[in-house]
Image (cartoon, rainbow, N blue to C red; front, side, top):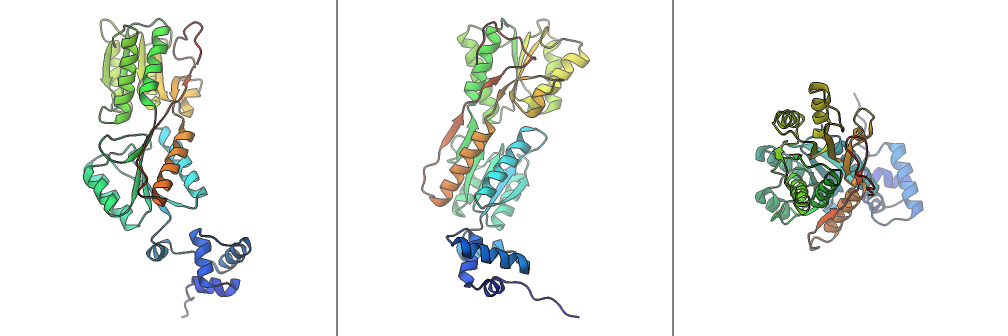
Length: 340
């Protein structure tokens, strides 16, 4: 019984008529002439050669692998963001490993250990907290980390988010201008910077107009908690005439409760505004007014920041906040003369 010999970079070099180092340069993304790249890739395709990323990492110190860590994907915003992050990194010659991790310390520790075993060049965390211990471990291993859609004060890590405080303030101004005075907020999880900052900006925007929030309930970024919060709010003796919901993922079940369970009209009885502007927000069944997260600009800033830190580890860490527009649809009363 015969076995086929393993195809190596030397085999590719011989067929292409180039040196083995030229093959390495082509597959590592280093400088090589167009003719060399063409010959090497043709030979590799003919032989069925696939470069060993881990072996190359041991030689070059670079795996050209980026780890993407996300806590959950049921929120429509994250699959969209991860797809854009993956495409942007692949265009730069990086491979992607996606890991799911709960926000528990055990889950994150396990994922980080696995990522380090793959010798990744960098890590992007999407709404996942980083302990000081994990931050130190990544730094000791020479692995750069950028937080996406969440910031963490005191972590020493770069982060890229939308301008959550400005977004919350803009929603407050919109609802007050629409004549609402009993305005409640179903906030995102208070343990996240995004939830806290949106709630703070919203409360400050109301205060500037001389209005106090009717109530603020932590919706935990879950559909179930948000739906129950809507029931609790509408059971009050003075129910809200407007609700700002901390993201679209929670806003949809809030609207379902208001209309399907309680028989209310949105926006005639209650205006609802979300945050993210995911594709479902534009569907006629919801027609949700929402503060748009500028996901393309957030992705571009994240990739630029991470790759910049990989190339220059001494580069100062930075906190990037990108403002997004309020997208007006039919779920909230529109103030007369309102402009973006």
